[in-house]
Amino acid sequence: MNQSSEKPIPLEADAAGILRVAGTRVPVDNVLHEFLAGASAEEIVSSYPTLPLADVYTLIGHYLSHRAELDVYLKKNQDATSAAIAEGRRRQSGLRERLLARLNTSEASSAPVLG
Image: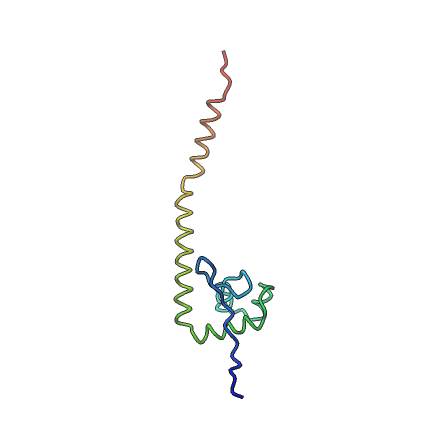
């Protein structure tokens, strides 16, 4: 009997193309970033209790076997996240001043007329 006992990679892509651990909402990015920061599979599972330990080990093994292509995926997602953060900061630039100006305008227009 020569059946492959290789476990399938527990990954699913969501509608936005984000890879998640199959059956969970945990992005594979989170698991791999923790692993690359030095966390063990057990430590990762303690951070994400919905993850089966065997799946984390399988993902780590898959990453180590396909590091180049997964690093490209991680970099692309990191760049997209950085761009979204920068855009949010750009949109909020001067927000406090605009809100204070609006507040001052509304206070001035609703102030009682003395006379």
